[in-house]
Image 1 (spheres, rainbow, N blue to C red):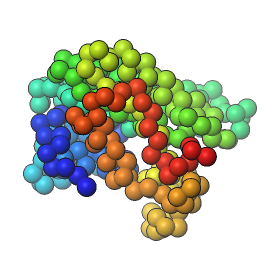
Image 2: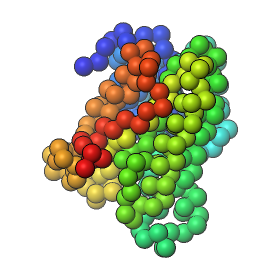
Image 3: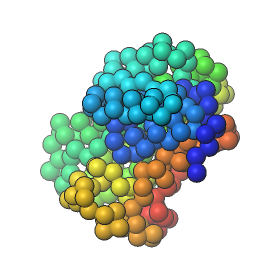
Image 4: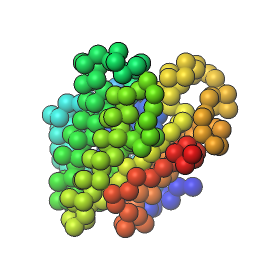
Length: 256
């Protein structure tokens, strides 16, 4: 259950906000009182998301942003500060699976593209978000690492390497900023009912969640709103002693 006042007055950027976990997170943060700066590549979906938050009485801004392009990320952070005067938190959720198959068959350019969208995008976010959050007096960042950040996925070597990199990057950033009041944590998410997960399964948008394959001990997929709830907690003042953590919300998958 959301707390309508827990994030009141906090300005939070969500990168990769136009669908799946990012969209659910933007809506949850707004429901808890945050001012949401949504960033993503799909302008139509992003503007619709921001308009919906405003229609419900919240505050939101959408900025078209390709997280693999540093200038785009820098511009999005600048827009947040220019519009609302500060940045208190951020969620780096952009990602995708671009290179699949046996390692020896992965094209070098596909490898670089995979690292760009899943790892370099987080680097761009942290590079520009952390100083802005520090200037506002402190806050928190949450990076989405997925289960591939702590365990291997056969046939997804590039994705696995990138998400492992997100975990290491998160820990380094957490240590660098711990004494300046900025917390940085990573989530290990798995089997979440998102458009990307359905594409990987070859499932249609109409297929009921209960029918989706979910190789974890619970035997089910998560709703993106479940992930958003943990993100909201980590961004809140209730989590001020949590930093440098890699937190699993994966139905027990990485406990096996």
